[in-house]
Image (cartoon, rainbow, N blue to C red; front, top):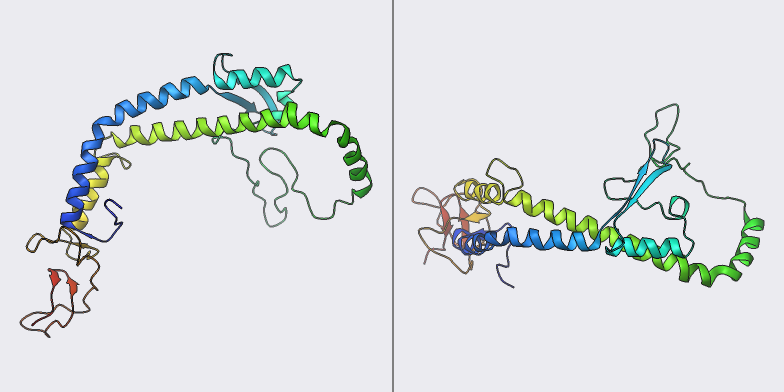
Length: 244
């Protein structure tokens, strides 16, 4: 695998990796444009909810988009988006509402009460199951199939937006915590820090293949005034090879 390392490597190894990454940076704008075009093709379907978690409105894109076509088909087949669909975007998560010492958490953020085991609904459940035998296949074909496609499309929209935001952040300056310049600058700081020995500064004795990158970290610094090194060791001064 190319550049097959994570946090332990030599300066020479990372220099090659850095050159590759920097050659890819000019392509960011083209990638964002491609993702935005895909986002325009897919479209979106967004619900608004009140404080109790009930849907108050929903917005569907024009019928020419993929989501617009799916939603039009869903309604044409009798689907009621307000009651049956209620899809949420990643910015609208459902979570357990905070309780306190006297009132334990009982509600989800969408207004639903947290259920408990033992519903004691065997009699009604049996009847409903018998009723569903008549419409089961019809529901699956007319509603559930389209619902799954709509939810997958919206997941895809979330992924596209996430990647666009990540790529936009990578273009930022060193001051931006998620920029490529910031990431590279942080590696530069670690490389020049003699106390951080996961990165071996092999300037004096180049190791471009990283053969000695994972040598054990020395428990002491071998040298003229210390013991002689008997093994390959990483030290604040770089790699030390065993004395012959």
